[in-house]
Length: 568
Image (cartoon, rainbow, N blue to C red):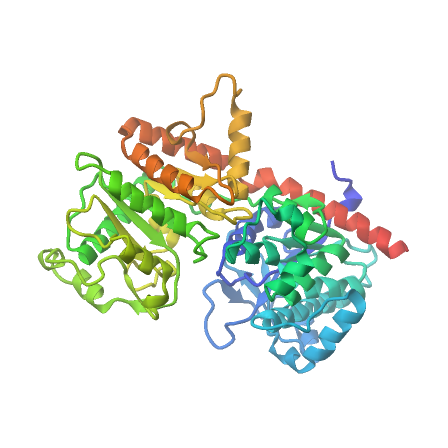
């Protein structure tokens, strides 16, 4: 139990993905917000970058009456901040900051960071400056709020500042120096070095003990990002990460073992129930088949197995390479009497919008839509540099170009499914119920929201032992029954299959993917329904009501260490 004096009264969370839907951290924050609001109503503040000053942000509604007296003070302090509500369950207060004015003093900020914390910004490039100026601006906003409302309070409030990823580390260090009474937490969702090693084709796991983080940062040209990440981890009151996989990585590459592991939870707010789910599944499958038929000039039977992978376009790290290799091997093995397969690749690439020929066909009559396959009948949007696209090149080289007789067909969807992509015009979560099986054979995956989202939407999935979620799922299944009476886990009994993955077993993983898809396609309806039910049941164990206790531990550690630090 956490002592009452170690519970926060106010929590500020800073992230590049507040009201800015670009990755998995958005899901972490947005699904956890309601749990936090239930505990600390409107004493929870999410701080994000303001990219929408001259246009409407569908995720944020400004409220000029909210904290109006303080907002006027920020104007006097030349801080540009908009106050409103994040349009997610719980509708927490969101503070969107314009960080661009601080570019003019960038060198002064970096100089102070070097003198006070030893952070090397000398080798900065790319998005480093943008992220750092946002981080600095966010900290200045918190400093202003604290001075205006809390510093002179009769009962000194307990305040937490949680910074997510290297992009917000600078702000945590600034507050540690300038507002020492605020307890700081830093959460890394993936280390810069670990992601870079994996993404550059170097073996990460077998040699992790031998890598020197600073040396590898120089070799991979990420010194500044590594430096802010490493120094923040060492100086904050509580250092956290999201899985045991990444905790080991932090210990070896950042020379700092996390104080607490904060696994990523989920909420079921937008998972349709009962009859609504059945209708959502029917609608999603209908739209997937409609687009595929228009693209490929063929008709899909209702029993076609729809398989998918999704996430960021990290060819090796996310396992897109081995997923497609598995699909290629499946295509060679599937016999004419077996269930046909439609394999989706839902990863946003550098694209220029929907294909006009596909749009025209979708808007035409059904007879015209199935006349003949379009050119390149495996992609739904126009790539800007198709010759540089690894998925497109793989499909061509392996002959996965959707000939009429092929039992396995592939559809590459290289866009964000945000409801306005021009082809599907449905959100990712609207299409998810239409899938039969998902495959996330990640090589580098600190947690893995996509497989968690999949099982939450009753869709069984394959993942790996190199994903934080995969290890958690294995642990949950091991707890549910004795290994002595329980057979090896299978999709039809568990809803999740966790494939052992190492630095060197690519071929084995590809074969497993092909075999597992083929085996799942052969299940009877009763078995497939049992797999869907098992998947949904597993997801219930990952709700925030089960995982938020780890955040309470982190708050207690941070507050205790801040109190100790301020007495020195």
